[in-house]
Image (cartoon, rainbow, N blue to C red; front, top):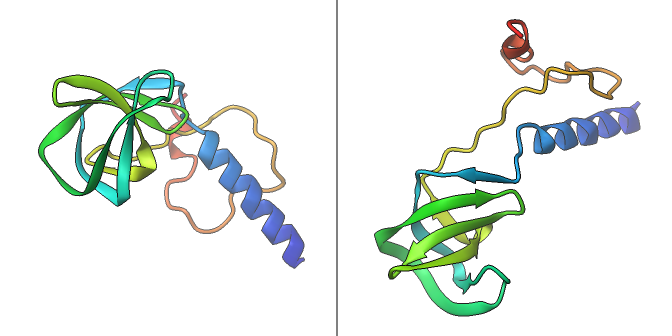
Length: 123
């Protein structure tokens, strides 16, 4: 029984991680800080063109594009570069839209999430 619950958890995690993800989204946010030891600034071919140290960013760097592979296109010192999303702090809210079509799982309502399925009623 414990393995079934674990399997259901993995299925739910996979569904949530895929729901509402697109390849690229325009963004109206900013990078406010650099995490960890620093962030590598990369060009479109993933070649490192610079490094910024950990800490707050002033003025904030505008986010131009959010890529589905976990990269952000930002503007730093007048140049457009790419950074890994996990290496920076942004003010962009994380959202996931509902997937209302058929889904593969044994039980769709796992746990006690309020409002689950409510978005699909009007579709």
